Every structure is written in structure tokens, then in C-alpha cells.
Image 1 (cartoon, one colour):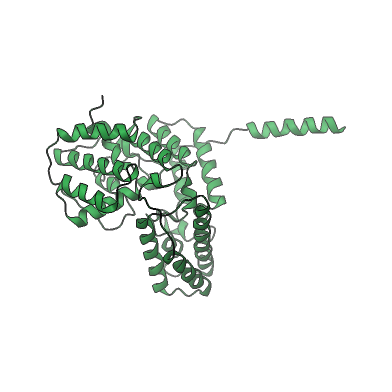
Image 2 (image 1 turned 90 degrees about the vertical axis):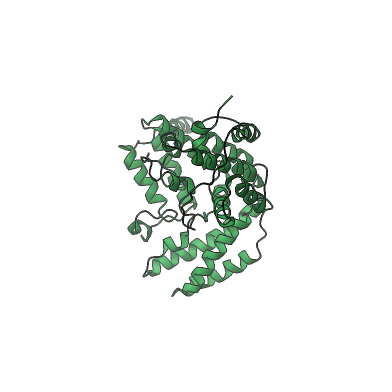
Length: 349
């Protein structure tokens, strides 16, 4: 075979390989099970999966590749409109800098990687994970991507707790001590919200678009929300929550609404806009969600400080300072989720 023909055959083979369609999952349940297994260290759903010695560390190259392949396989499936919308939202999120923050502080990943009686393999995974997280934060700094002070505070608490546990692994102890010192000297970004990140405004816009089910800029949302708030009577909401942010406030608020299964660990594997559209809201609930949406835009677009955001919620809802602190932290960790109720509450022009 001459060189020209060899290259032609090789090129043809390459085209066939590249055009080969990913094999779709048999059904949506199988697809969800795959993403849950991959995300097990982030979102604890199956302890046997989490403690596996073959666990894929979150946001590693292997993790990102496998997650992308899962999304590709799902694109080859027949999905409902709601499922398609969430999948497209998650695919868009791949463009943004989430991968640099490999320890999502909504979850104690380190705890999830270690069982009650950790094996040597689990200690190795955990030590590798801590080093990887520090390396990723260092890489992020090169692109001017930094944690905010709420995220840093939660991460330091996790590491401090792990150091107090005094795990029987010299390597893990060494990594934890080094990482804690790194966090003590870490300089956070000035803004709590997503706008403080490179491409953060675009990232926030994608979240607003998905959860609200419509396309308005943050400034347009401010106008819409202000008009709605004028016609709403302020009432104090009845709040029930745990101090943990492992499940978002909106997900917990919808606990009595029929579940619509989803793919996003940050929504507790639910499709929140679909559930919110079926939720029964009294005037107090509507007032609460309006205040959360207003504060959400304030934090993630207008760069409100923590005290500013708390004052706004206390003024709008007559809640305690502790309640306001919890809600503000939740908005910081789960941007735009309250906009799931927009279609039910906001009068669009």
C-alpha cells in the first residue's frame, strides 16, 4: 500500500470513528444511576459506591471525561422537555470554571471518601483528593478565580474537623496540615457572588435562564421583581431548616411536592422548575420566594455584601438574623434556584 493510499484509509477510519454515535442508555433511570455513581463522593447516595477503592475523584480529568460521555449518551436518548432542558443546562455548565473548585463546599467530600473504618486505599484516595484540591485552587489563581469568604470558611471547618479526627494515616495527616495552612493564608475574592469570577456573569445568566424558564437579564429581573414586590403584602414566613447546606433550601421547601427525577446533584437529583410549577404557594410563600429572588440578584449580580443581603431579608421577611444568615449562605451556594418559582409568582410583561 503506497503512502497516499495509507493516509487516505487512515483518514477515512478517523472520520468513521469520530462520527460514531454514543450508545444511549436503556432508560432515564439507568442514566441517573450512572451520574449518581459518578457523583457519589460529592453527593452521598450509596455508601458502598462511595467507599469503593475504584472511586473517581470529583473534577479530576477522569471524572470530567466520564461525565461528558454520560451527557453525550443522554443526548442520544428520547427525553421529556424538562429532562432535555436540565441536560442542556448541565452541558452549558461544562464551559464554566466549576472544575477549578474541585471541593464543592455544599458537601464534605473528604468525609464521603472515608468510611467509619477507613482502608489504606481510602486513606490514599483522601490524601490524593486533598492534594488535588489544593493544586486546583492554585491553578485557579492563575486565572484570577478565587473562593469567596463563605466557601473558604466552610472548607476550613471541614479540614479542621478532619484534623481533629486524627485519622490513622501519616500521609493524610500531612496533606491536611499543609492544606489547612494553605487555607489560612488564602486570599478570597472581593465579591460573594458569581459575578466576582471570570465568566461568572455568563454562568449566572445560564442559571437564571434555566431555573426561571425564560430569558431576562439580571437588570430586567430587578425591574420585574420590584414591580411584583409593590403588590405583595409582607408576611413573616414559617422557616424550617437544618444548619447544613448539603441540600438546598429550595429543594427542602419542595419536599412535599411530587418529585420529578433529575440529574443535578446540586438540586438533590430533582428537576426543581417542574416541581415548583406544581407547588401550592400561600401568600407568605410567595413573599418568601420574591425576597429570595431579589437577594439572589443582589448577591450574584450587584455584588451585595453579606450584611447587605441579610438586612434586605430581615426587612422583607421580618426573620431573625440567624434565619437571614442561613438563607444568604444558601443563596451563595445555590445560585438562582429560587427562580424555579418565577413562572408561578412573577407577572411577565
